[in-house]
Amino acid sequence: MAYGVKIAKGDAYKRAAAKRRHIRIRKKISGTPERPRLVVTRSNRHMVAQVIDDIKGHTVASASSLDSSIRSGEGDKSSQAEKVGALVAERAKAAGVEAVVFDRGGNKYAGRIAALADAAREAGLKF
Image (cartoon, rainbow, N blue to C red; front, side):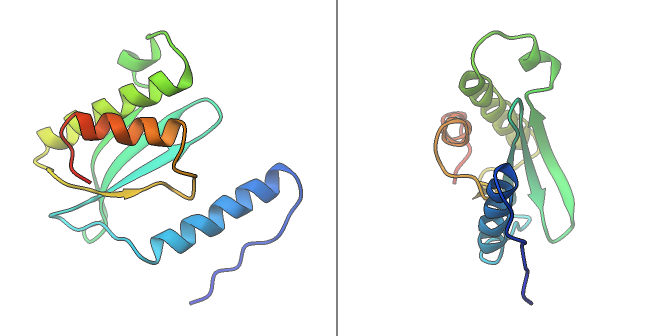
């Protein structure tokens, strides 16, 4: 099955490139009940992380920078991403998940994406 993403200009080009990268990644990885998929969604202001079992189509755990415990905290966006990573790992472990497959969502593995992943690893989630 071929997926086409239109070529655009400016910021739309960046979104289209991220969409192409995400499609390319999703061809190769999928979440199972034993190893669900940790999906990271990044916007200019916020970070959202979800642990998804693709076979059942259910979200096992999630965390966001919009959560009240993180939103009230101070710090830059990278420190908020670290808090999101630690929180999603804590919630996933409470749900019985020990290991995940990391889905960076078409974003480059740097900055806030890497900070979230590192914090989740430090909290005990295996990649």
